[in-house]
Length: 178
Image (cartoon, rainbow, N blue to C red; front, side, top):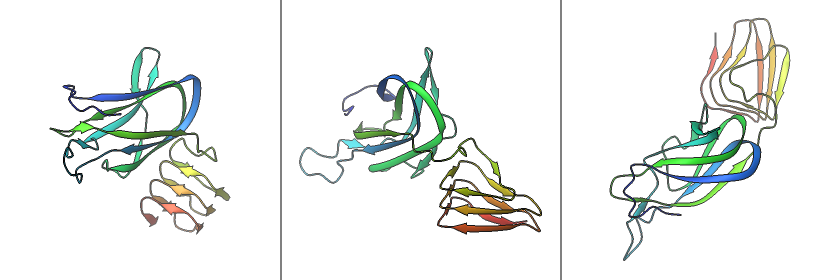
């Protein structure tokens, strides 16, 4: 799919699932032919993009989008967010000046493995196993927490007098010992 020659300031690619569908991850593969020979140098990854869903008759940005990489790149881009259900989604893209947008592939998943996708999480005398925390993780004073094979998008805050064990996990922010 491409927008070469489009006069629009923004363009979108829309998907209708046919029925409400739960999802929390969108993978996008943008096309860039800047290194091509004759006839190339016409398509680029977008300057910016957002995943949106249709709520009644209104397009709404999916809340708390975590984009990897943060700035759109050719080929693989991943957007994660707390799970939601919608029948129709779109990727709204802003082209780089002078170039068309190229989109090679879109994949939509419901990848959530635990109920942690709502934002910040407090873990007190418990474990988080194979989940995703979209905000910050806090271990309160006097408590313990095992973080096993989990992705924490924000910071981990460990209060004084508490304990934490992190195994096979990815921390997107910092680990703070308070």
